[in-house]
Amino acid sequence: MKTNPLEDLKALAYPVRVEYDDEDAVFVADFLDLPGCSATGATVAEAYENALAAKAEWLRVTLEQGLPVPKPSKARDFSGRILVRLPVSLHASLSDRARVNGASLNQYIVHLLSAGAAGDQVSSKLEAVTGHLRAIESWMVAGSMTRPGGMSWRGTDQSERFGWQEPKHQGVAPLPTASSAFESACTI
Image 1 (tube, rainbow, N blue to C red):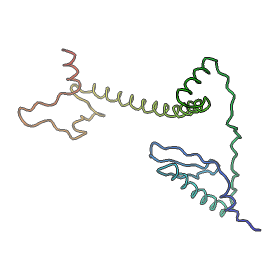
Image 2: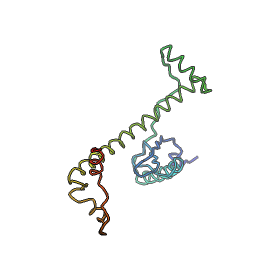
Image 3: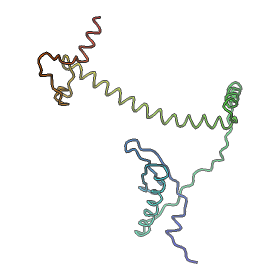
């Protein structure tokens, strides 16, 4: 009985990681053991399906070129069981909360751990966004102090940069700037 090496390799369970790429707003599926073998999709399922097609093509080209194909790495065997020692008061509190939420203690702890792991990812992304906002705020504060009564941007008046024009009709007062509004608020 003759086997097809490509079909045999495609049948192997290579680990795949699927992550969301904020910059491109797509899901990216990577086969960790196959360098450069990845695909994107609008959903996790689409990214995974596209990655399976990329895997088949990656394996085909690698075999045709006579290059070695890595074997799939094995994830360490995890049983899903851990033993954790808790203070009695925490154990009682978790048990009470689980009962209030209509879950077993085990289900409730898994829920909390999952939420914590997801929260860590969200927290790191929020920290990055906060850093960007602080940089923008610093830039805006620095820009507002470069020219009395208005902001400049790298030496360019904001009205020039955005094409704004001062009112040319007589009797129409220009809009107050942020600094003049602040100054008048401070004098009240």
